Length: 376
Image 1 (cartoon, helix red, strand yellow):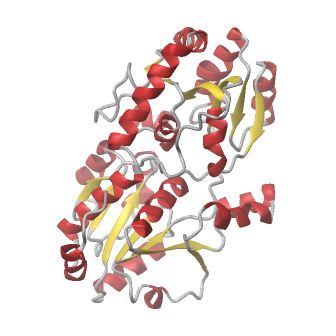
Image 2: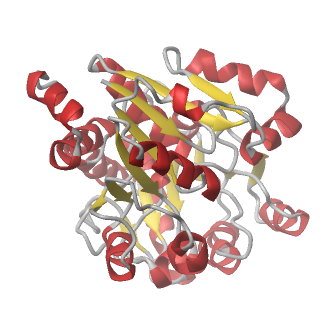
């Protein structure tokens, strides 16, 4: 089948975690013999910021790191109907311009044979409800929501015909343990500043414990204000700015522990939805301690796969214990890796996607599915 994904960007992962997941999904679809294409706007802010901060070499790296994946930019004169003429499945991400969301739906409504799905991986359904409520999803065959609480929000609001939970996951072709790299440093966190959505939490669960324990370590991510960078460095940590997602596994491998600090809108309004970095870190076999969030869907085995810290003092205690006891850290890492490999890889999500298409797919899609051979 031919899958076309409308995304903010496939090429750039600057402050754009959905690119991680989409790359993994597209790679697995390609592995199974499907054709994939990502369409992204030529003025995408993620790509523009990557160019401005890292230069053309960062864009060129995409082809080196992800051979076989194809992205095409579109502008005002782009013929979307022609681009979708041979598509079997079209998946439109929620960062797509609302007018284009409606236009693609109209192409489907005018008789196009592809199956059309809307994909939401953000908290705007609760933090900026009007943005989502104003979208025209009349001709969409279904909605993919990256957590059960978000799916329930769509159902309660009457957005979309059918709504399915489709969590993000780790691209385990990329995210895996690298035991040949020595764990020379204590703590790493890979995460963006996130405006004011977790400013206090970063200070409580990361900077404060690291300073109190005298840990060595690294912070990677973008949009950090100067005051935050000064606080990180005063705590004895190194701030490294943007990191290409393809380099993250090696960065995790060089450290003894990592943390998860969820953004406040998810904790308060969309509980049960972790960021993709939880899946990716656990896939790399690094011990993880998380700030509070509620695993409503039983995605993991808290206490075995990772540890929850109730507050900053608890985080300090747990990080200190893990770093001082390598055997305990290794047991946590092994459990987390086991759960990822059993349930939370992009291979699992492609299986789920094909199952959803079997339920809502057009006649052309279901004909394809009838002849597909299972791929493990």
